[in-house]
Length: 216
Image 1 (tube, one colour):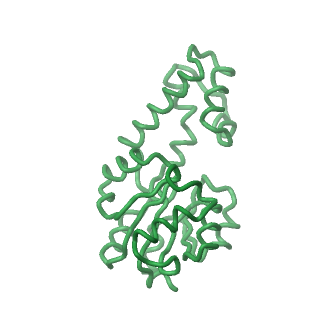
Image 2: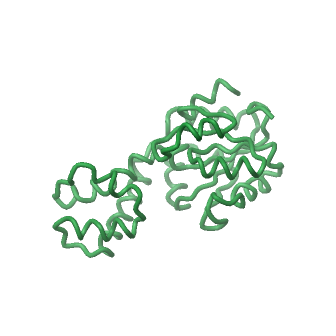
């Protein structure tokens, strides 16, 4: 199956369609700056492997904040919501790719580990949510280390996995989708450190969503 012959396309959101990875990476620095505190160099690298709960403990322990960990968490969540609803852009060529697929009659679906409401709000603001037939979340179907979320999307589209392409920036998700029989189309993003493995694993690999237009 070639990409131009698919019947449905299942898209990850963060890092694949939305250019949200820099936003997440800089969140701790943005928070400290909002409190008038200059972050130390390398803070993003320190926070990158942490969960949000771990980050919320680390910041008050290492910076002169009056906020409790719960207060930091509430502030971070408010910042995340505002960034999705107001700032987060599409990745280069994403809108053009989605419109091209939609115009060919290919069913488009979303599969995300992110917050459903915020993801929808961002994509509606950017004018592309209307192109999708459904949105599936890891909260509903489990992490992308299991194929359930992709299989649910394919079932909703009415096509077997071998007629569907999964667009992802995550090596784990690509491995899962490929093992379940999906065509895999990887997109490079800073959130995935194993780019060479991602490149060699996926059926297709491109730097941006727009780079896929030439394959349709």
